[in-house]
Length: 513
Length: 112
Image (cartoon, rainbow over all chains, first blue to last red):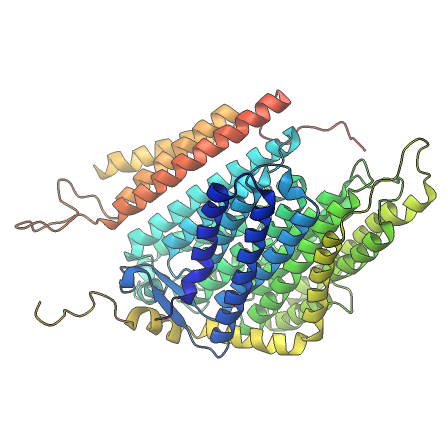
């Protein structure tokens, strides 16, 4: 049994207390350890992803207890890809936080960042629903700290909303878990997948209720309309690097939906057949429409980006709610794209703060380093709105293509294309107002222009956009890998076998006992 | 006993939701606390209600109660306790800073 699978959880878990205890007053040492830790994480994640890329499912039994009784971590194609995505994003966001000195504006930024990573990594790797809940709480409690990093009344108010909404979500999660346990007597995902098939159609009320409750919990995490209310204020008010890291948090919800609703409650399962797509598809279409209308209606740049995150999550959920291999593959491709695009946009919003009093969409003197910032915004906006040539366009094309098999193909095409148009208008308006019209406004007399943001900031944002371009260039191989991933998800047999049939400490009585 | 537990969960939940809709920090936090109590009792009952039976192996005992929900409840209690403490601190900070304890977005004067 390889121990590397648990390394993405253990490493930040050790790094965070080390930073708090040993390097409390030395921001320089904190930075070094944070970057080194995340770089190691990227390497480990790449190794895991490489190991899983041929389709092997690797199991890690904590304490060597066998599956339905012990907690297991499972590394397959999907979870390792999400772990790698998180690690790469975290490294670039951390570079930005250091470059922009956001990490100095409050205490314990680096430690909370590491705890946040621990929660996200654990949520992606775990093979147990209750363990998923625990890791959700770990990432949430770290995110509460990060969200109010730097303080300020506005941010604290948004923080209260964010915390309360997520507490409600956690309570709902526990209700769902209790209902599932009462119906099946297990919370291990692989074990659940087998036991759910044993439930007769006459006795399906409880499990149907539980599966919809669970879907609702994950939809809250994924900010699906009408459960999205926590997102705009908290993402807009959060410090920029934190908001950029939060770009992966909505994807945790999408990941959980993909995982649970392809393995535990697959679309062809008799007791819950047709239940999820029926609710999910209209909500996803509504999210996309509302998100993009929000982009057009936003009065501030940070809220505009927050609404574009809701819209892009709507796009992901449309693809997921098809519940076909092609749909899931398209969703996975779009998840990678929208994570990087949203993170880049949040960081660019912070760059435009240099030299501007407010982020509201009014004409003001040009921001410091306007030319470069404007170019970056241009590229990121193209990616987010889904214009050619960047990966947003490819992803959208894949989603439109996958929706042909669905009955709601007309709705999907109409709303996806309409929403794209609206978002293009919204981004173009924002960009021209902030960067273009600014050229005609004179710097007020007696003030000096603000200094240009540090080069490291531009390096971090540039790297995110480079990754987006790379994601476009290698779209072919990426998409075929996503298809392989989706095929693995829709044939969970090997996964379940690996989890349930691997013997543990007490599986067989030893000699002489 | 089933009726007693079920109605307790129901009353706690409805009171929690009512308080949460009050949109002021204190009632909302009270409401969240009531909801977590409700979910704890619910989790506890998800392993079927058995009276006076041990959860771990004891010699000479025939009926047992399910030990797993008790472990789950313990985890849930610890987590909800910690989360409540965090939200109280953040809410206090927001209240002292803004002199206003509404949890919804303040109505802005259409600021530019």
